[in-house]
Amino acid sequence: MSHEVPRFESLPTWAQGALQEASLRLRNGTVALRLWERVFTDEDRKKCGNDVESCYGNDGVIGMWKKARGGNDYEAVLNAALAVGFLTDQAYEELCRACSVRSGSHLPEKPHWDKDARRLTYRGKLVREVKRPGQATNIVAILDAFEEAGWPSRIDDPRGRDKNDESRRKDVESLNKKLLKSVMRFECDGTGTGFLWKRSEKPAAAKRSDTKTGR
Image 1 (cartoon, rainbow, N blue to C red):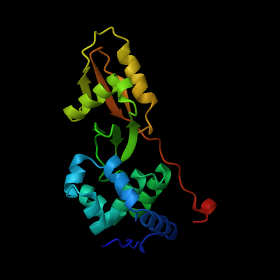
Image 2 (image 1 turned 135 degrees about the vertical axis):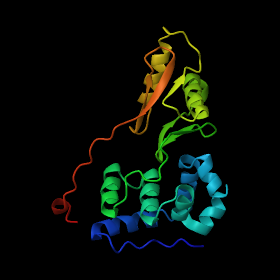
Image 3 (image 1 turned 30 degrees about the vertical axis):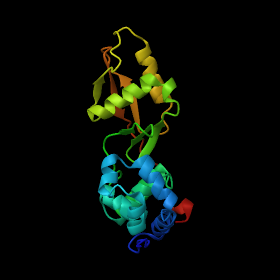
Image 4 (image 1 turned 90 degrees about the vertical axis):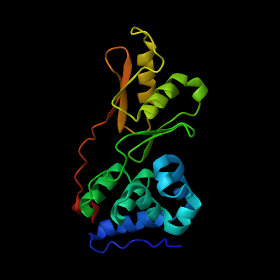
C-alpha cells in the first residue's frame, strides 16, 4: 500500500503547511468513497478499474485522483481537496498561484448528472442533489436530457411543452435556487422551446496579505 504524503519543499512555508495538511486529510477511506460516489464520473471510475477498494488500497486518494484525472501531485492534492470541501475557493486559488498550477486543471469542463445517485457535479463539486425525484420529475427530466446529450449548451425541452407554458421558467428557478455551489446556472433559451446551462463567472479572488496572516 503506497499512501505516502507528497513533499512540497520548493514552496513557501505557508503553502507547504497547507498542502501537507490537505494531503494528510486525504489519507482516508471515507474520503475515497466520497470522491468515488459524489465526484468521479463513470469514465473516472473506469480508469480506476471500477474498484474503489482496490484502487484506494494500492494508490491512496491522491493516486486515485491522478489515475482518474491525471496531473502531478500538486494538482491532485489541490483538486481532490477542493472537491471534498477541505479547501475553500479562496484558499484553493491562493495555493494554485503558489504552486504555479492553473486553477481548475484536470477538472471536467462539463457537468455530470449521476441519475442513479441523483447528484449533479461540476468541476469536482457537488452542485445539486435531488432527494425526492418523485416530486421533481421535471427537474430530473431536464438533467437526464442534458446528460444523455453530453451537456451541449442548449437542449430542447424534454417535456415538449407549449411555448407559452410558464412551468418551464419555474423549473429553471427551481434548478438555480437549489444549486449548492454558484459555479453554473440554468436559463430558458429565449424561444420557449428549450433550456441552456452556463458556467458562472467567478469573481476575482481577494489578494492574500502575508503581513496580516503572518505567513
